[in-house]
Image (cartoon, rainbow over all chains, first blue to last red; front, top):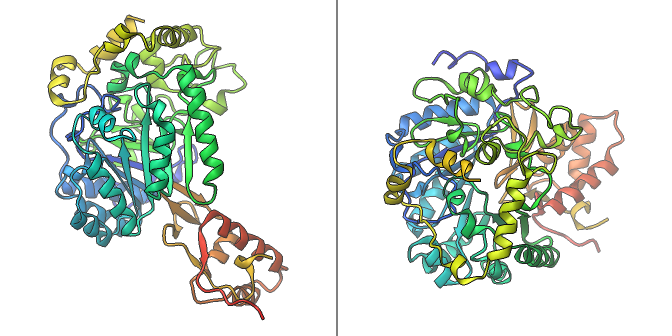
Length: 399
Length: 98
């Protein structure tokens, strides 16, 4: 660790701002099987989880550079038996610590232990507002337990974020979802429209909401935002497939977010592993300072110089930074292209064709009968095989 | 003037927020689930004093001692109102004026 005692290189180089957000994906193991999971399809092939001391080192190095937010995620982070230790160390270092969980694997004893270790916040995900649909989407019998956990999270004084991932199969429950959040006294609600990466990309056709669903969801979300003002903060993000300008993805490549995957691979976002031609560094081989400031992968799409047309000459390039590199790759085959969500992109039609297709066929029996592929190790081995790139590329070619 | 900046109000940090100095940023910050607000130097000085011990009038007096050249009272009250609206602080006890 050459940088253990010297001042941070990133802090001394004005061009590279330090990371603020460290997302620690502790494991890809998960008792749930949500078909919209943003983890890569190759989870079964990614082995060798970092151990406790690796994580301590990662957290120390990122904190020294200036990271303040730390998310424990996965997979399901509760599976890690050392989670209490990791939380305690994170808190000692001065992080604001977020546990992003399904609630499965949690009990009162652990909620209490996390509190004592210094955990700041727990985000509990729900798959739907009803037991039946929730358990179907999660691929497990979890709804009642989640309800119980959410109540305990509040009881122990944590600020609580409830996260609902929205898609065509549950978007009609928007009102019931918000009523559930109100009943559970959530402080924040994330109505997280499915983003099409990883498993969600594979299941895109079955998950894309219809225009009609979105109009309704937006209306209801707005209604509750007004009604709950000052008591509950509701974040609602419309799915970018229905936009004509791309999202400012991750607030820029290598700008704010640093994801460390379970095997130690450092990524500018949790979906970036699939991008070809980039060699993402591993925390076993390099310290965070070098990874963030110096590694070729983290510099590849930093700033604006990498852009091609139409982004290069676009007056809005500093606003959206050309959108998402992974989406550009998945939908156009080149990660340096404009995100095709943008209607200035010559590839914009791959997005509009996809949503028109869904809007035309949604609700018809044959179309809705196509089964969702659930996220589990068996399906990962079957579909993704050993190649990290095959899936995204195949689907891109079939556009 | 609302309750939050009333002379007798005793503001304290709300339990669901964290307030701390960030060396790399060179400023005080407020942290909450998945977010951070960087505070200006003056906002940081005010927040630092919202400790559940001092009343608003004591906070103002204390700031006046440390920054005697500045006319700060209106700004302090305005900031406390804002901080209260954001939910960063809450009145520890509220003694209503007679």
